[in-house]
Length: 59
Image (cartoon, rainbow, N blue to C red; front, side):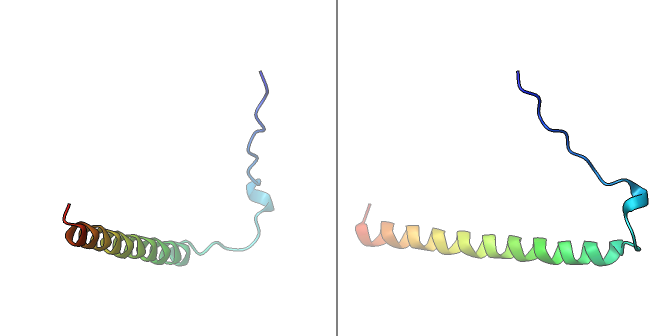
């Protein structure tokens, strides 16, 4: 049985500077909204392509 390497987090005293949580949340929210929007658009395009193929092939 092999031992898995443990994940080591930095100790709080080694983290320097203030962390701007609201700004981080805004950036992550923007990124998440972009990903959700792109996935919705791509799924609509894929659905339209499938419907077009079914229509033209008369399946």
